[in-house]
Amino acid sequence: MSSEAPAQPFQGLASVRRFLSYTGGLTLLLGDATRYIVSMRFRFTEVIHQAYFLGVESAPIIILTSGFTGMVISLEAAAQAVAYGFSTLIGGSVAFGELRELGPILTGIVFAGRAGAAVTAQLGSMVVTEQVEALESMGVSPAKVLVAPRLLACVLTVPMLTIFADIVGVTAGFLMALIQVHLPGAIYWRSVQQTVIMSDFTKGLFKAAVFGLIVGLVACYEGLRARGGAEGVGKVTTHAVVTSIILIFAFNFLLSFLIF
Amino acid sequence: MLDEHVAGHREIVPDPPPGDIAIRLQCVELRYGPKIVLSDCSMDCQRGEITCVIGLSGAGKSTILRVINGLRHASRGHVFVNGDETTHLSDRKLNEIRRKMGFAFQYSALFDSLTVGENVAYPLWEHTELNPTEIRERVEKTLETLGLEGVDKRMPSELSGGMQKRVGFARAVVNDPEIILFDEPTTGLDPIMTHVITETIQNIQKRLKATCVVVSHDMPSVYRVADNIAMLFEGTIIENGPVQQIKASRNPIVQQFLEGSEDGPIPL
Ligand SMILES: Nc1ncnc2c1ncn2[C@@H]1O[C@H](COP(=O)(O)OP(=O)(O)OP(=O)(O)O)[C@@H](O)[C@H]1O
Ligand SMILES: [Mg+2]
Image (cartoon, rainbow over all chains, first blue to last red; front, side):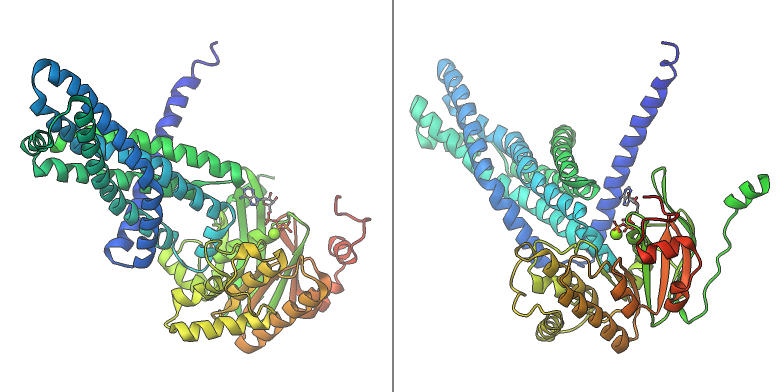
């Protein structure tokens, strides 16, 4: 017993150190990649290629999740609204929740699971098959040719997917209200217009861009950290998804607190 | 005993080589965690000559090439490449040096998302101002000399191991580097291809006056290409000199290795 007691502060210290070195590593990588992005020293075609690849991969899942979410909010709201005679509020409540919170956050999470995992697995396997070392050995920075385009692609793609999610979510909400309580379209859409303002939409997109940055950065960082074969790649991939989802929730709270 | 201990940890005074030495390792120590892979490893590579590094599997031969290229940093000692101390260089300076260096990896390390042609063209894209037609011509010519005509549209995964090896070789030499590092360029190749590769190394070296470091187990091809041989044993260069000197070495470890016999000081 007595021999275990002094170990605890050191364990605490070790995890603090791990946390600091992790955030430090993320920051350095972000700095490196940003340098190449702002000085335009990256292949733009690669960004388009990545954005297309990552966006197309995630789009179907995002459409499904946001469609179902829009429907379920509408379902709940419709039942309450009809009972209390507030059916003019259905459209507003769906759009408000979708644009400000659910659209960005669901897109971010799905993107982390689908695109983020793909990026980590790809970079991770490039590390363990020495492809990243081959790049470095030529004097080419992985931050420039691998990280910068992927990061930019993520930052651009998540807001675009979020627009999709918003549209699908609100429309699915309308369909649900129509089927469930036969709410006329005019009332639903007027309620949407009266409740949400443009900045709800743009702030939602800003959050989405931040989530894209989080997913891209964590995915690249974890991928480049992979060691020791296929097992190592699997480990960092799981880790990347879990870390980015936690960070998305944390930053969602922080951003909602700060900008709304 | 105490003196030895102190001497072991004293700073090693950097000793920059004269101009005819392209690469110098001076008392390099390299660790992976607690494991010491290279210790007190010193070696000179003459400019414009071919130095072969030989040694047992796991001796640290690939690690030496990585240290020369700056992919691994020595925990002690100094590395000079073309007169520059590379151990403490900034990434940008290091990358400048690396641009003039080719590295053919032991396991090829081809970019699996690019075609063979794109793989070989990669250093040209990144570091030269050549236009696409010139790049294509260069790539085709290089692939041709290695018996790989017509594969440039294929993906690396569609090639055999030996073909991948030659593509990696092509990628390392395509932009006419000043220094070329070959990690076991002939391992796993048939005798004819071994001959082709050996000859290509000699031709490149003659044409470019490049400094080559070749890691190899294959003694016949070592004897054919090498100007100098360095024998690595347990992380240290135990013998380094012209081919004749190595052949005549009295060191029992070198003798045993060259003869490939079971009896001798090398533990099996
Ligand atoms: N990334 C690494 N992490 C830990 N140890 C490593 C790593 N890379 C190499 N080693 C160790 O370093 C030693 C030297 O490895 P190296 O690859 O340089 O050997 P080698 O002489 O090239 O062998 P071979 O002829 O089999 O290719 C080995 O004992 C190996 O276990
Ligand atoms: Mg090796």
